[in-house]
Image (tube, rainbow, N blue to C red; front, side):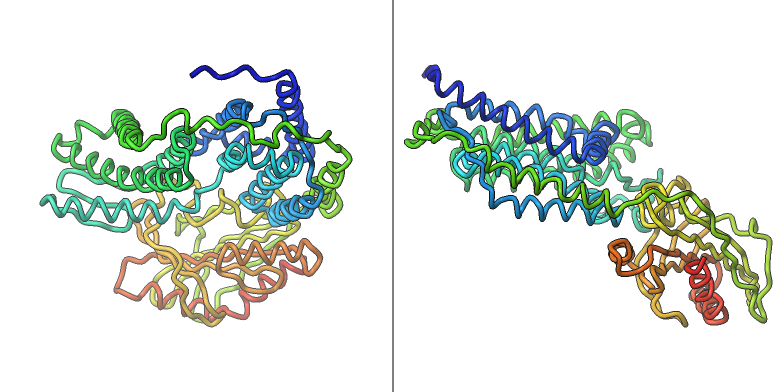
Length: 506
C-alpha cells in the first residue's frame, strides 16, 4: 500500500520539529563541547564503541520514518522538565569534578535527551520515543563489564575443553593445553559483540514488531545470544588451534573468524525473529486524532529548559580553575631495624601512575632475605592527565608483560585493611599490597577515592591523594610473601603514615 503524501501543514510541522531537534542538540553540544568531542573521539579510536559513529545518522533516519505519525503536531516545550535537565547537568558536573568520565558522559547524554524531550513536549516525545531512547547508544560505557565477561568466557572454555577430553590447566584468565598457551584478552570478552548486537537488536525489534512485549523479548535475545555465541566462538578457536597444531585460528584468521561467526549468529537471530514479525500495516501508524489540532508553539516555555541545560557548564567554570604545574618531593621511610636499603633496580616491577606531582620508589631487604619494593605517587589539584584513579593508571596498566592473577581481596595490616593482588611479570610472580590516602583518609576502592576527591573539590576538604604500592617476589614457601609484606607494614607503619601526611602538607 502506497504511503500517502503529507499535507502542506504536516510538511511544515515536520520541518519545525526537525529544526527544534537540531537547534537543541547543537545548543547542548556547544556548551559541553569538550565532553561531546571526548565521546566522539572514543567512537573513532575504540573498536568497542565505534558503533557510536552511526547513532546520530540513525537517529535522523528514525525521526524521518516517524514523519507520518508526527502529522501536524508542533513542538510544545515542557518547562517543568527543566528540573530533570538540571539534575542531569549536576551529574555531569560531579563527573567532571571527580574526573569520572563515565559519569560525565552519562550526564551529558541524559541531559541532551531530556532537553530534546522537553523541547518537543509530551505528545511529540511519545511519537519519537524510540529515536530519543536510541541516542543512549551514543554512550561509550560498558568497559566495567570486561572483568566479569572475561572470567565467564575463560570458565566456559576450560569446562568445555575438559568436557570433550582436551587436557587443560587454568591459571586465572590463562590456560594451557598440550600444544599451546591461551589467554582470554579483552577482545575475547564479547563486549563488542554484546553492544553491537543490542544496537542491531533494538533497531530490528522496533522496525519489525508492533508490541512492546515482542520488542523487549527480542532485545533480551540480542543480549543473551551473542554472550553464549562468544563463549562458543572462543572455545572453537582453541579447539581449532589444538587440532591444527596452532596453524589455524592463531593469527589474523583468528579475528576474521570471530567476526564471521558473529555475523552468522546475528543473521540467524534475525531470521528466527522474522517468524514473529508483524505485518507492515500493523507497523504503520497514522497520525493520532489530535495530531491536526496542535496549537501554535510557545517558544518562551523553552527558556527555562535552555537555562537549566547550561547550569552544569557555568558551575564547572566557576569551580574549576587553572593550576600552575608544580612538583612535590616525596621522601620514603628509612629502613626499620632489621631491614636494609637495596638498589631500586633489584626489583624490576613498577606500577603505572602517570601525572603525579611527586613519586618515589625504594627497595628494602627483609630480615628473611627477601625484597620489598615500595612505590608512592602523590597527587594534588587533580585534573585530566594528572589524576590518581584513571584508566591509564594501575598495577598492570601499560605493561604488556604483566598479567593480573587476582585482585581485590582485603587483608589486615598494622595500617588497617589493605588491598591485595597477585600478578606475574615475565616469569616472576609478585604479591602486592595497595591502598590510597585521600584528604587524610584511607581508601581501598577506586570509587571511594573518587568520591572523596569529589567532596574535596566541592569544598569539603583538600584535593590531595597518595597511592601506595608494595610488591615482593612470591617464589618461596606458601605464605612467606604475605608474611614479609605484613612485617614491612608493621615495622614502617608510622613512617608510611608520615609519608602521606608530609605530602598533604606540601
